[in-house]
Length: 287
Length: 287
Image 1 (cartoon, chains in turn brown, blue):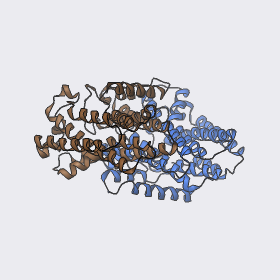
Image 2 (cartoon, each protein chain N blue to C red):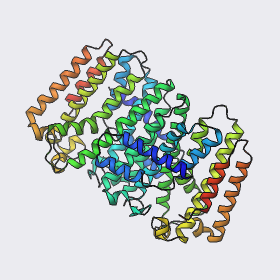
Image 3 (tube, each protein chain N blue to C red):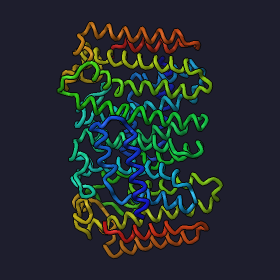
Image 4 (tube, one colour):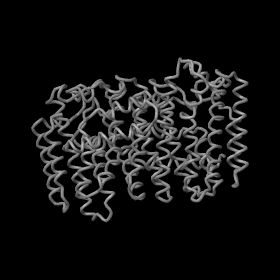
């Protein structure tokens, strides 16, 4: 996976460098968060889907970068004092600590703009590009990521059940992981509907498993391993899979969704080796 | 102009209603700012350009709405405590006062997403839609609106000269006004380059005049007339055209750019009556 991580890091670096001729404070702030490493799970998911469908990686670069920019903007805004108020991200000071709140807000805003500019530049047929843009906007907006973050904040200090928790996570985390697969399948003309559905269902199960593992890591790993504050869900009085189901049941649920994800991949007629490897990575990660 | 204001208000209302089935706090917050009236100068500029080029208004609706959504998101974020810290906007409580800071940040974020979703749905040829999206993203991002706001914040409490002031305004306010004209001309296939340039130069002069008038109103009108705090530039120690040039010279500068704008319109071979009316309105406004 290192090859693909290097690939996206290099592409992101070029995109942000080209975004402005001036080395302004805003640009530095955008670079700080966008190029701070991270596991790059979303780009990996884009590349893995592209490899499966034999879509040119030079095209997939733009999708991977646009989605990672959306992810980076959401992390900057989520970390703000008015939101999760976190000081640490990927083992480094969060954007508003390193710079200032106003710059962090604007860096997030400008990264969202850059995501759409990048996606609009995808070397692909215009109708497909328009469809990808509409989908990313939907999955990251009010019914997707931003809406999920709002529900998540409102659920703090409240007793919520599994149905609400699933709804929050499907929007807050699931939607953008879905975007990785859905945007990429959009580029494969003549892909049979039932095959497309398998890819999308795979992304759905992967997203749920990803979030459960995230919740589990928050209570089982320390701050140094995570690169962000451990036990932050408990601190913010957030309902999680372990808090609602207990740790063992949460692990079983993660296994259940991972198995569903694998099963779907095995029934896809294209080569899904990289998607399988990525699924394994997500389950086995420790941060 | 009332006809067009009603038209965009009705279209925006439908778009935001359709954005989500649930009447969530986030949706209410987005509606609160997007449907709070305002002069709708940017949509009017889109419609006036569309009328001039005989572009279907049912198509122009999407451009007008997308740009107004970007404008609305920028106002919500600009008003935040970490930025301009304003309590009053269009005679009403600002978004973070009415709701809360986290909701205001997310409402801005989701309005930006909705802008691109709306623009992606424009009933026009896909290559033109892609070009419009790339342009809006550029003009509202790091080299446009967001970059200008960042420069503006950094210039507070500093002695800056006219060159810096012009640069800040061209990005912060001018870029989005440019977008109104540039996106709309993008839809006119086979428009001669020299004619397109006249439209774009017109928008440039209009943008400068608009900002000078804005600076003048801040020091000459009271809070009730403005619907936002008067003298906020002085309070925030911001350089303005009147503070750098004196009030009369600033007025003369505004006249100069308005005259340039009129002159360009008179040399365009299409009907520019509505563009002229709008230019007059912008100069004569008192809030």
